[in-house]
Amino acid sequence: MKSDWIDLGPLSEFPAEQPVLRKDDAGRRFACVLRGGEVHALDDRCPHQGYPLSQGALRGSVLTCAWHNWKFDIATGACSFGGEPVRRYATRVDGGRVQLNRAIDTAAEVRRLVAGLREAILRDEPARALREGLRLGALGLHRAETGLGSLHLAFEVLARDGAERAEHGFDHGLALLADLCTWIERGWVPAEEAFVVAAHAIGEASARLGPRGRGPGKAGGRSPLARIADFELDEPEKVSEALAAERRDEAEARMRELVEVRGTAGARRALMPFVAQHLHDYGHGAIFLAKALELAGRFSAAADEVLAASTVQLAWATADTSLPPFAATRAALARVAELPLSGPEGAVASAASVASVDGGAAAPAVSASTRAAPLDPAERAAFEAEVLAGERQAVEATVRWLARGAGPLALLGAIGHAAAVRLARFDPAWEQRLDAEVGVLDVTHAVTFAEAAAALGREALPREAAQLAVLAAGFVGKLRAADVAHVAHVAHVAHVAHAAAPAGAAARAPGGTLLQAAEARDVGGALAIARELDAEGRRRAFAELAPFAAFDAAVRPIFTAHAVKTLEALQRLESSDPQPDGAYLEALLTYLVPVRRELNARRIAAVARKFMSDGRPPEGLY
Image (tube, rainbow, N blue to C red; front, side, top):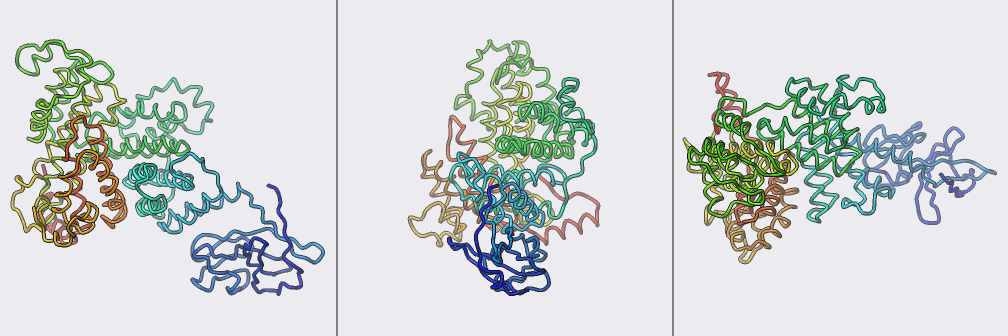
């Protein structure tokens, strides 16, 4: 570090035990205190809101900002009350004159700012976290080409910190971070606002928690070189084996080692067999893995923590499809295991296997190019109708098409469209019932799981992609009871998303935009505008609604996370759909625009009282 000493004047002009202001030729301000024969110099601008510390009060070695009572140790710059520390400068006295070194030790400053940023996240103080992130960015260490701008390093710290302190592994805050980074890079949302939202979502979930405990697992205390040298003795499949046996510490340790040796691609390959076996945690297993891979690809320095967190989440996950209600899905997966699948994306089925699945004559052989092609409109419509009819019909239709040679990705595209239709059909009466815990977020998972399955399936083995298609179809079919026509004991309905003229319609001025309708919570008006849009108009609509989803649609981070990931999933599904229509945007508006109760105290109390009375679970979708 090259020194940059400037003269602040004669020592005689610095009164003892009293803060004074000094400036350099550029107007930079320094709060200086002569105490114990030494001149201490701090940034004059309080790191909280910039008020002058030189006008504060000194008691002992503590300088207190007069405006908000923040307190700083003049010897270190540490903050003992308030928030982040203040920058301190080296001084000396030469020939009776005080000199100050303006040079900044960049490495020390990075350490200071990162520590302050992490403490802010730990305490769930997003405003402080953003200030520290902006100071970190002002050092100019980020790559100029990054789409996250000067906040790139702060976002990377946020990803790493959130991953290592997530008590039970990868969670909604980290998934939200992945999508918000994508939106910043597209120019959909400002980086600063997005950082605040992500920092709060991550901070709230792990407030005041230390790093997640790590058992010795497999890695133990061996050096990185030793681990690399004998890595081939442990195949990546052992990660899935450890997960299946609930050896969580071992699975996490193996994943860290795998990322070190084989990177993100190796982590994907190790986790895919486990993820493709079941629907985990209402779809979160695949959803969070897809987001973890995105984050790891974007922030390579945090890849080990992010993918370890995803492994931990899977280690704690419930295998939903192992439960009694998913018998049809399990049977379908067993049939997929018997299909002779091959090729990079599709399925190769022998004539005998097609006949056995269809119960009819053997079908002719299908070329690889046909297998990779999407279903034609009539075939797709028929398939989607079966997916929407119920779990059994959905999975049987999926296996039948796989046996005929249809590609899993083509089927997942159709399943994603069916999931959007299911979300648009959600009956809000479910959210008014006090005897059930069903909400619209449950149905959004069918959309986000279908999109995650397609994303993972693009680089999966053929059988894994086929399994993901079966799981996605069964999930969409299983949620049929959420549709308007299938809700029993309908309670009072606050609103119906498909109403042509909702009560709030008058709030929308004639000729208003889709965003204005959304902000007015005018569902009918928003849907009317959306139905007039062409494909390009729908593409712009997703971008237009992104800030509303991220900053305005909800208050609690869990609801914001679902709003963001659902919009992103629907946008991706439409973008990749060879036969796109308005179903994706209609599903988004039906879900996103209505005002939804984020904490239903009456329902929570009613469900608890009922359980204590009869010991039975609340009403659900299956």
